[in-house]
Length: 124
Image (cartoon, rainbow, N blue to C red; front, side, top):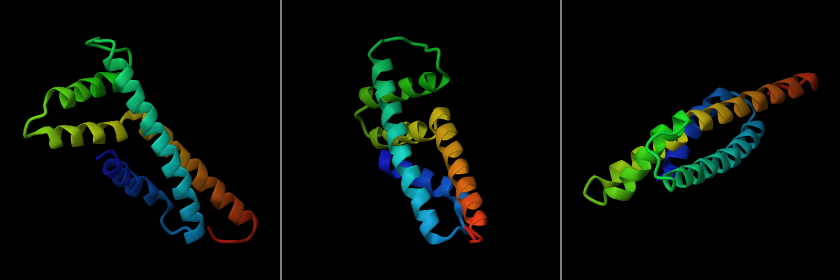
């Protein structure tokens, strides 16, 4: 389910690059996907580590949202389990730290591609 959530977010964030030359779009998309996967994995590791502390509150707003959702996944193997896991996965991918880093990366890569192609007299 985390892959589905990541794919949905990729579709959203890559809209900023619509209209670019296909090869440039694909190159940006590959880099963003790689960084998104790494960032999501890092966030998941942070959530698991935070969960093991048994704290109720954290200094990080993202952890205050994600850890209780993670605990719900562990504690609720019932009929709502898939919905609980889907909610957690979407929350990880859409968390502030993930979105901030990925959206900044897309902007930087898009601007770089546009600047580079403009300098070469090409259209991005």
